[in-house]
Figure 1: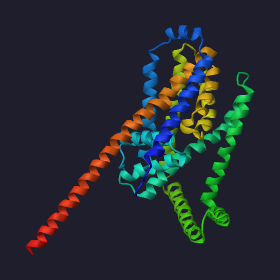
Figure 2: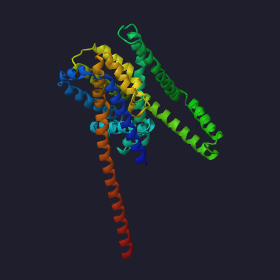
Figure 3: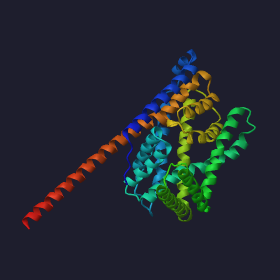
Figure 4: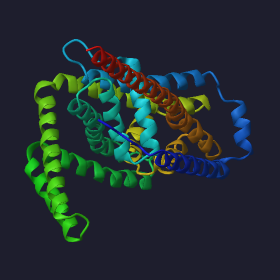
Length: 364
């Protein structure tokens, strides 16, 4: 299985991510920073920084445990927790720099390198991406519960309800894939045929693409049914780890607020972040730039004065995005170097074996 990502594409992703992130963050800080900001920073309780860092580290280990759980065969797992956390960090880096689908596929490749079957790696990656969507269905009772909350912004509530629409669509598509895969095939076939009519694909490519699509749809449906029928307990445990990883994310933001000396109602702060999660989960921009920042700008504005919300977003971004991206790049660089060394050793062994064969033939 060969995966080649052009260096130019990665470089463009890095440039876009850095420019957008720095631009948006500088704009937020200019808008929110006042003289009171510097005074309040002097009174920040720095004892909360280790707490924030602990939640940040715990978040990736909990997320990695979901991979470990899904990869188990009997009582053993081909993945260790440390390696699973590293894979999540590497995949997170790539998904921040490149299109979403490439980021998702990177997890498949990384799991495949851990000597898993491609179908298994694909199933684990798909489920990791799909399970959180079902958590978002809890937005419905949460919205009903918070509907009468006088402190919640009407605009913010309506915005979140609008974001919930894609969640419902994804769940419907997931159900159709499970129970009516033939409908997906018909839709895919119509799309491919339409591409042929407008001269994007010729007839030979249409047939090839259709066959591949049908195979992938059948395989994906079979894998999902296998997990749902034979590994229900595993799915429940993996969902639990992902949910705990989400909670660690939420407590990072809450700990930042505590550090400034403010104490929001814990349940309300958690529920609001749960409502916000779909916004950052489906953000199409590189690293969620802009969307993540302004979403949490709205969150911090509910509990902090305006002159602190920009700093709050910056600290949150450092722990949830910037530091994990740096760590992921270090791990990815290490793995790339290890792969190059391994390929070099394999090539050298191949040359040695060829030379030995040639020597043996001469003696014969």
